[in-house]
Image (cartoon, rainbow, N blue to C red; front, top):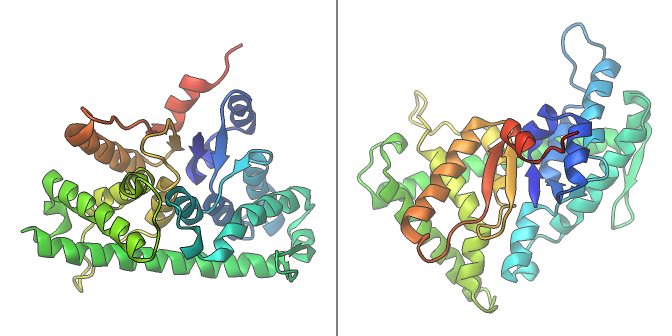
Length: 299
């Protein structure tokens, strides 16, 4: 499966995306749909709201007809047999994201979109104005949670290593913490009654790219004047989209973000260094240009 992140959707032409999708399984995370939705009514200086809407609407019409993925946490829960522990509302995200794309594509203007409604699975209706506002709040909450989690990870890393700052963390620190984290997740699931076969392997396949991204990015962070770790908000979406990758499947994450490329290549290289003689990683991360050159049909 090929996964286009938001920067890839923004940076590729619609015809190129759909030409590749005729030959390959191309998907988009609902997080990308929500991120684009949040900016539909934000306009630049000298541009009317409707001009901005038409330009940004084009980003969603680029992915109309492509496969929208499950929420990454839902995908992970299914992969490890922990569906019963997942937030049930996350199982609705794929359907809601698809309906958002369809309604935005049909809207003639921003005012027309704001009048439209989506019926949720519980039968309640929400206007697009409310959906966009609620999505902004939800994404801001996710960004805060992500930053809080990263800071907790850094505090734990300080207990396990001699590093005085994230930039001083070594590959060995990263590797030992990744191993410990995956094992801790497996034990947590066992404690909660998840008893599927090969649980550790399933957790590793599902979560290694995500936690690898988190820890690789952690090593690039600095502190503010108050000594607080500065975690870029954009890393939240990039981290969560990394969760769509199956370590041992031929998944491809396509991105225009060099930080994401560097982080994932670093942790996949770390896996290859320590484990590849037993099981080689199969997933990859590619730039937009490399992806087009590799898979865009010619002629």
